[in-house]
Length: 341
Image (cartoon, rainbow, N blue to C red):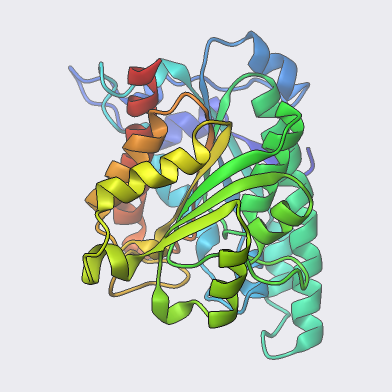
């Protein structure tokens, strides 16, 4: 694959901080030795989870958002590898694949301006090219019977996740999206705000639940659209956390009833979590612990086919904390799924 950068033994060793009388997560994960036939290699390995990153800001830029999502993978992987390897973290079931690195596209972004329609159009064409890489890699992993854990990039990559999963499973898949935004915008060229609408229109997405929409940032037109589509359901952050007309745990169950009876993707947008550095950082949102509870519930479902953690946009000073946050999410997901099977 053109953009896939495999995680090597050298990468692993340079990121590991070993300590005597301790065993780190990274000492037990598996790696792929080569690019040759990813599907065949994965099929033969006794792993259940394949972790990879997406280093790109293009989808966020194309949606007129704040860039920085390309930094999430590097922030995460160093922390993840240095978790403790113990009965709770299941490191031996994990393969660290590497990342889809769109460095050449990132360089092109530097020459584009969000105020120019022609430049936005160019960025949206690049997103379509990113889609192809993401969907192909996800399809290879899911076809091999493994669960992709996808870190970084914008929420545009939900499209590739859904398409790749649907192609591998030969059926449309469902999705639950922990998000302040619906990402069901018009099909106006690909960007981070319309991954789900494109996947739905093209038959890769069936049932869709948006968990925690912010009422201040959802247009009346979108509310009307969502209400018209029987396979799309949502709740709002305000109903759960402010007005208290809905209960968090009951809404999790309602979302689960809508998506978990069939293969589904678990999408976590860091924009939904209060004060997390992200492309649309919010001062009012769900807590980190609520996000972890959400991941635990859906990770424990046998029908979950991938986890995607996106939109985190850490600066250099914030990288350690964001990496720690994402690592909590990954370990929560693995722990929940291992307990359920």
